[in-house]
Length: 219
Image (spheres, helix red, strand yellow):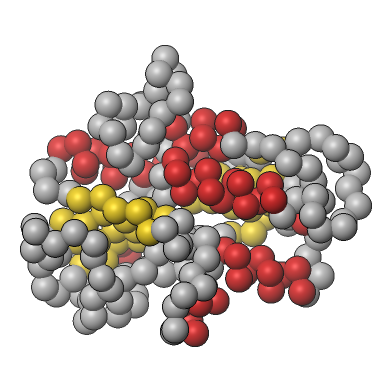
């Protein structure tokens, strides 16, 4: 079973939040507390989901919000805004497009949300939550710890196919200096490990093989 663990929040909402938060245990807002990867998976397990038959789908894209009031350049950590305007095009930006934005447009600031284990970036009235190498590694690590069958990519073309993020610093830290393309795919590959059914008591036909990585090209 391929499960879509992303798209929890977007421009249709009235406040900024993470596109694919791993967890959000500190939130006092019910909707935000259960709209996470961890909560979704725990609920599925209660309903009988089998880890060894479950593949975590990760999307190499983002959720963009447009704030009504511009964020001052001197402001560091961005707090959720209210009264967000509708974002043209649905507010979805591919990872490779984010790389171009950071490289070509001055003024972008990047931050890491320790609780949700996801990054976000902002400039003036634009606030974007996205996936990068660090957040992808966190999700693959979680899938490993839960004994899932593997992880999948929704549309590989959204990754940095041409290696445009190379030497731009954040949002990626590449581990293959001579192979600079597909940084998120390479992060997923490097983060594989664990055993199907580990820590769950589930029986697996895969035995003690490593968790398989599955790449899907869904356009």
